Image 1: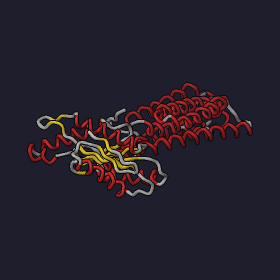
Image 2: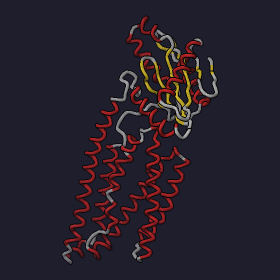
Image 3: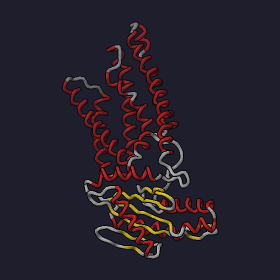
Image 4: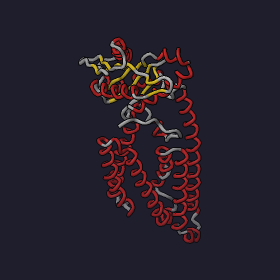
Length: 372
């Protein structure tokens, strides 16, 4: 499956947090939250049964949340592509629980205890999760919809006549505080999201190559350093491809730098369109590109490199024709440093050039070459 370029527009907070190598951070965070939610649900049900303080909502939803969250957390370990579906399913369960608990509280707890129980302290988490899971504009609509639905449920289910007859000021105060604080939470999250998003976009500019709109070398070095820390010491496979366009200097000399810039942008797009999902292509400098392939050993990386080589060979540039490339593959070895890994990829790429260009070569424990 070929990767696609990222769509323009705003991103959710988790999408931005998940920009660390290939959404591993985001997936781990969601798995952790689901498992903690399952444990919390079971613990809450156990405590309620012990002190004989159960209610119909908890008796139905706490076992449901335990089974659902535990199942989704375990499933995410093996079904990585279902992350967004599980996030939305968990959010829907929590929203339904929050609404039904609100109805129970305004009908029974408010008249008996003159306030909400601690359970309702968690209701604002629905607003926060909307901003975590969705883009800002959508998150605002969802959070506002949650608040409006809670308001309508409260209006239709609160026994105002009884509360007014009993002059229950504490109950009215709890209702007012609940709804006003909801508006404050939503607006604060909206403002924070705008500030955080602006910071993220400004930071992104420092890691973006202006011409090709690809990540630049600074980003690539930080990403590789993180992968080496996470995987290199454990001996987990990942590989890089160093790619250099053959004879690109002639394009600039014969056609001018404007044409050269257009060729570079089209080559960048061709490289990206021939990569598997999860790969990253970096503008390393000049006409050099670096491809980072997680979960790829040398043999798999050589196949990807060959796909890229053929994709460039099949891409014709107006007035120039196809621009070919030499590609060098290097697999991460235990104990590798950033310089060692890049040096091996460079050596493989230069051997491909010395062999005539338009080919893939690798320097690794098992040397192999894929020639055009």
